[in-house]
Length: 123
Image 1: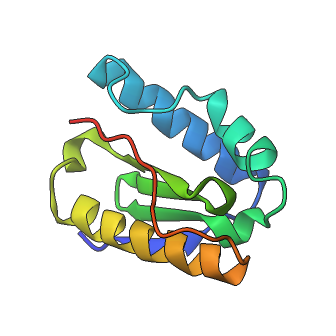
Image 2: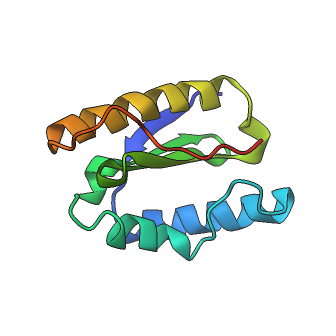
């Protein structure tokens, strides 16, 4: 099943990601997933200096959203959310590798000093 990565396109995607996280929380007892109400806060408040299309990527497959990534350059961090059935697999590893590289790329682009990325991990 092919997975395609794309950028954030607007309010419909925000709703899509909130629904994705609500469904993931329902089957994982919240383990590692942002509360759906925190997603717009992270996107529009915590990252208010950045274009959402530049910092938010969405991976989709035949079942819908497979994963999504929100980079927070100013915070030297990112939110990486993977569908529960794909945790621990190749897509998650690929996404985390991309997340590290993308975070560093955006930190450099916006002249944010530092050589660390801050993260929390859940399994």
